[in-house]
Image 1 (cartoon, rainbow, N blue to C red):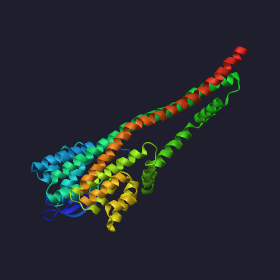
Image 2 (image 1 turned 120 degrees about the vertical axis):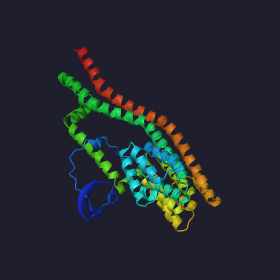
Image 3 (image 1 turned 60 degrees about the vertical axis):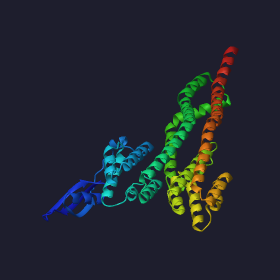
Image 4 (image 1 turned 90 degrees about the horizontal axis):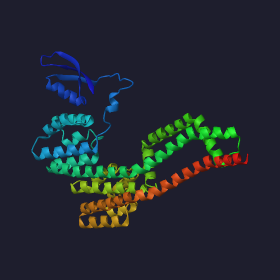
Length: 406
């Protein structure tokens, strides 16, 4: 951001100007380093252009690869005894992601003002989530910051692997369905109208399937702009609605009920919860704080709501196993493992086993999903081909028969 300032130098002279900084505190630190005592610092009013082409090329977020690289570098630097401020400043200079570069530069400034690393990172929650910050906080307090980064590396790599597996499994059905929709649109716009002209010239009575196809094609040709507008408006309205708290909760609940893929979404979220909770708990985070940290990181607001219910039950004095059972999101086997872990004091180890159990089920479901979706896609393709065949070839056969009779 750009800030305007007023200050006085060592001679007491009034100085005004502008500078670039991450925030007002960073701007004040820059002025102090220049031997200027700031009197007033305010954000400069900037005139933004209607269209900025550079925003199209700017990164929208920090990828898993960027976070893994950052954690690996920080682990190596902390193990080598490099001061945290120097390490963060050095990584800010060499980072290839602009968002991460700016965030690390701001973190370095905050560290210079005396803040801890966890507090400095908490100013950038879009990049570093609550679990990330809590792990760093525990690592700082225990003097094992390198171990905290090692656990974060493992956690982020597992997240990346899970995302990649789901995207690969969904790629085939999405591609086939998209191709079917595009094919139907092209057939309605260009193919059916040509057949309709031939049928009208002959004047033959068309069978019902052909009449339906011709009527659909005529409506598509005449009102394609309306169809496109309704489609785009529906998509935009849907995306805007699910970005609201109520819409996100509704959509996350609906996702879990989608046939075939809903169970995968649920098991991925529960695996993420189990592993993240185990990592925070074994690092020394109290159970209530761990539940509060983990709830927003599972990636599903509906399951997060149930985790909040578990947290409130533990706050009332109930056991984790009992509140987990009342939440109704875990299977009996998982509930038994949680109960045993709570009684034996090995909850973190058994939660890791729970996460492994869910990961194995996700692997099995992903392998089975292609086999389950393929027959459904083939059925839809068969229906599409049948409709086109009946609508196009039936009148052609009748025309051929009429020509023979004449």
